[in-house]
Length: 312
Image 1: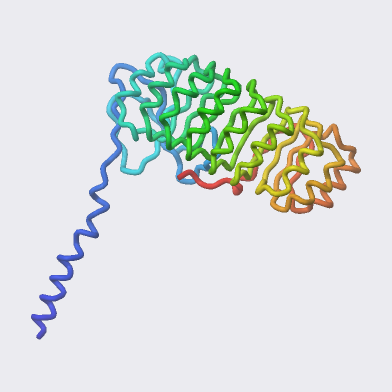
Image 2: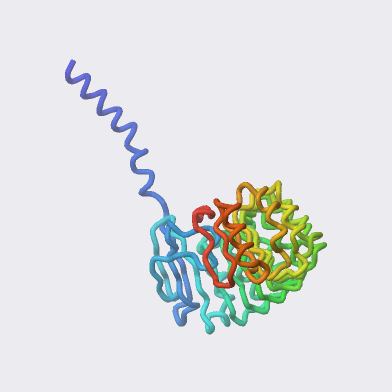
């Protein structure tokens, strides 16, 4: 009987063994960069990085050169160098899912270069701030259906780029401020069902355009600073939203907006123009909005990180 029991246990062990070994079969991440030169620096993204970070927290970095090997599941961001920007065609030699993100901030990249970027169909994060990319470049990125973060502020894009941006169904963070956009084209962004963070500062936004972006069902962080047509009445429009963080600096929002802010029950972080408020009015805001962290000056302070979800 003892032998029979041992035989039974052994048979169970043999049956279960493959399930224990499954994880070890995961394929490593292999990136084949050019051997003769570097495209820039390759960064390993921290697990604690937040989804809204323009430049997510990283662990370490190395030159993007030669054959690089990492454990399965490693997330990497390529920060392209000035010289590397001349060789973006080499991106087509990487596996489509090789990079998590790419940062080309303030580099001399072209609209046609975005065709090479679009070959990396697994990309989730693209930073283009301060480049000369136009709406054509955004159009060239349409194949990236996994994109979650797009930073295209201070570029050359115009309102017609909104149609292309709306074709990224997984978009969560969209930074397109300081561009010549118009109210009418913002209506296309309503197709983005997962956007939580939208930055449309300094784009000549009016309440007409605001009405479009407030239809984003998951919007929790909104930056509309620098739009002088935004007023107290704009805050009234936000009552049925999920907004937790709002930046209305350098707008017409003033003391009369207090009753409207009191109805934003989810609001936790507010940035307003200090020049619009007397010291007494500032105290009144703080007393009547006790659960809101209010900033009345122009000093840059980070939005509380807990508002944002981790990268995924």
